[in-house]
Image (cartoon, rainbow, N blue to C red; front, side, top):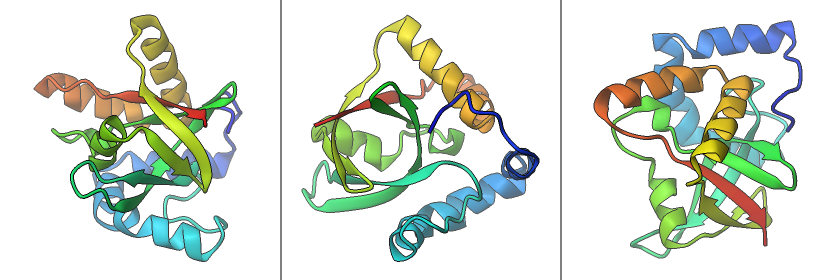
Length: 160
């Protein structure tokens, strides 16, 4: 997924809706808990987040050691895939972030990757800017988390 690709009218409208309070509620309470199953059942043809680039991330539970599947927004940076642990701007990192820190080997749509958190400030800012190009709601999430002192992690998934 090219983060600099031009968005069509339908994508822009979907993003506008997703950035409303209702859209955030929908993402947290409906789309996020169900989308991995929908993506799997439809071979990725249908997703509950409209036209946003979504894939199923499979991680190993940090404490349980069990396989966990979660839908994530993503984009490509060269051969790597980038995911943002925004958790809709909530006060805690998503569980999948903790899973990747504990067990960096993962799968995205059944392709194997190794995750690493982006720590270089310039690379982080560049990638977060690209993430905002993919979905403008990341700017909203960043404003929310900045206000509470949480830095949203950005992770690079490199092919294993």
